[in-house]
Length: 55
Picture 1: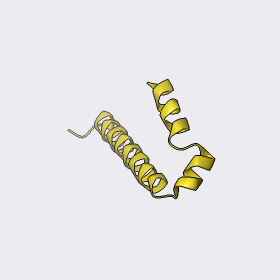
Picture 2: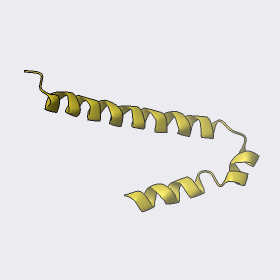
Picture 3: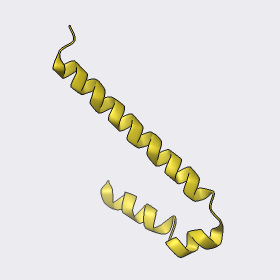
């Protein structure tokens, strides 16, 4: 019933979920920074361009 394929599928799903959660947490943190700091690091302009390039 529980083969290595099942465990690999679950591990892959959990990994994707963790990645998505980390991305959301990072966006929230970045959006909480002061405007002057965001401008200095190029947020969200650079981030939006990078995401558009990916897919």
